[in-house]
Amino acid sequence: MTTHPPIVPAIHDAHLLPALESMVRYAEQFHRRGWLLGTSGSLSVCHGRAPLKMTITVSGKDKGALTPWDFLTVTDQRKVFAALADPKASSEAYYKGDARPSGETLVHKAVYDAVPDAQAICHTHSVAGTLCSQLVAPGESLVMSGLEMLKGLGHWEETPLPIPVVYNDRDIPALAELVKQAALTSSAPGVLVAGHGIYVWGPDLERAKRHTEIFEFLFEYEVRRRAVGL
Image (cartoon, rainbow, N blue to C red; front, side, top):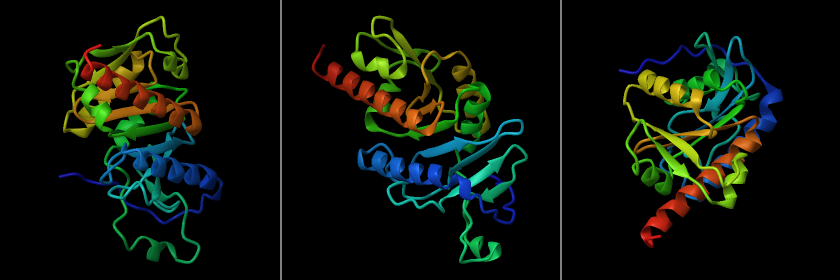
């Protein structure tokens, strides 16, 4: 049975509002493109290290209909705050619901721990990404090369780019460790989870979003390439 950190009284982090609004917008765009369906996936930003402090989507929300209030801030001490408190309600009224941070919070934390430059993460569940995650065995890498779009990941197309694939362990702490170990050595800003989706990071939210779009292009290309026998 999954246990959640205790929710403590809300704090009003108004400085986070631009990032929250961007995550709402990007989640809606990803949902429209079929990458975040059925409440799947998660987005986060990191705004503190030592100790780590990140703000992430709440669990179980339609990613095509998020609001800036559908995010929680999580600390290394496993305290959870409202990222943006509702000014019309007391903290007690605000927490009468069952808001919980994404079930993938530990995986986001693992990426932030592994990649010091990562300041934002997008985790998508596209059909193409899921198919590509099953083209190689867990522990191996999906290798992409010869494509102009690889430059969007800071990689020259002449050099093969390995995208690591890890086993989809149902035990979240174990999955987080697998993703962390892959991220530590990955030359790509992303890790695929077999039969699941991809965790993508960037030095800011805009570049994490851009990297996500590039990965999804690569995955769709690879699926179509194989379908036509190239």
